[in-house]
Amino acid sequence: MDPHPQHLAADCLIHLFTFLPEEDLLRASGVCQDWRGAADTPWLWRRLCLQRWTFCDLTSFRSERVDHSWKKYYLRRSHLEMKMTKGRTGGYTCRSLRGHTGKVVGVTYLQESSAQLPHLWNVSSTVCSAGTDGSVRTWNTQSGELLWCSPEQKPLSGIVSDERREVVITIESTGLIKTWSGRSGQELGSFSAPGGPFTLLQYDVNERWFLAVGNALGSLWTLAGAGLTKASSLVVGDSAIDILLVSPDKSLMVVGSGDGGAATVICTQSLTSPSEDGDPLRVSTPIRGSGAAAFIPTQPARLAVIDSEPTQKKTLYVFDLSIKRSKFKSEIQVQQVESFPVSLEVSPHRMILKASDSNRLVLVVDQELLVFSLKGDLLARFKDHTLRITSVHVLPCRDGIRGPLLTRDDVEQRRRPWDDPGEPVPPTRRFSHHVQSGDSRLL
Image (tube, rainbow, N blue to C red; front, side, top):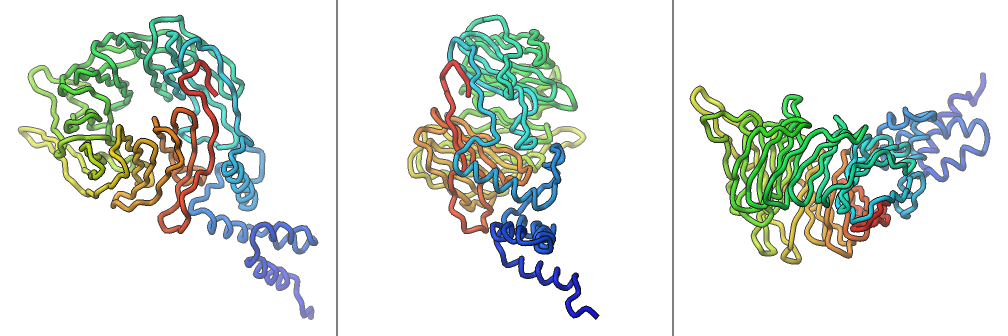
């Protein structure tokens, strides 16, 4: 009888290898064939993956012609994080997209948005840009090729898109709104609105396409279809509308002004299919001013709002919104579920509030970025921007990256994953790269 059966030796090796970090495990696999077989055991690499990352998705490799094993996943993901930490471009594509003769006022994804995080290491996207030269341009980001360019018109002031239908929406400084086919560049519709500057929001209700337009005089238009047919118009207040949000269940819209005044909650059905003899169903939130607001994407209509009081001590509120319907009337209910104080180091000029699908709130105050739980716990604080942050985008939690952020000031765009609140890891900048803003080119 063999006193050292082969399976027993392999089990002993695997047990010993559990004490090795990944660098030593890789070295051990090169000793001999038996050690290599033990070191490549999927259980060992699965254990390393789950120790390092809370969420792991092996399906992120299925579009590539590689073996999507736990070992491959660990090595590829740790290599990607190393490049991000050191600010290296690595597998990222960097293109200079030139053609605008005026200032670029906006860029939006049209196809395969990185905001939806397709496979991080195999991305090809289409983006649209608008400029003060009056042109709309669509680019292939992988090749840098210009796909189409609109005829020059009056200077543009904004651009948004509907990725699913591949429709681009632009607005001129004069208030002329146009829609364009993302594939061909053909103009699909137009609508003229007075009283700029404007805020645009595209959304769907029961597969029907709508565009909300708010102006500086407190007026709100609802336009239907890519042809921009007027569905309704409403005077919400006398302050400029720069907060336009629609709830995840598409039943309610929040309209407000970052300069002050309570936000108004409106039933979307009152806007998209208004009755001839009734006022729109709406109600004001029970706080005096709304500095910024965001819907929690995992809930039907849970709204986070921070007050607009011009002080360093602010309060962040969380409300559940719903529509109560009875035989004789309907009413919007606003129920407070949470509130907590937010102490700032300075009195802010402007705030930005975003929410993630992991139930975290991201608050931008001038040059600072703060991450809160819905209970008010401060999870992370970033202070490495040198200029005021002008925009922030919270990406979905996919492909194993936990809650990444994209932030931008006038000179840099930065990408950061935040850590779980239970991990004693200080927040650090993981990746940054230079972008041109207010220029006639895109990087």
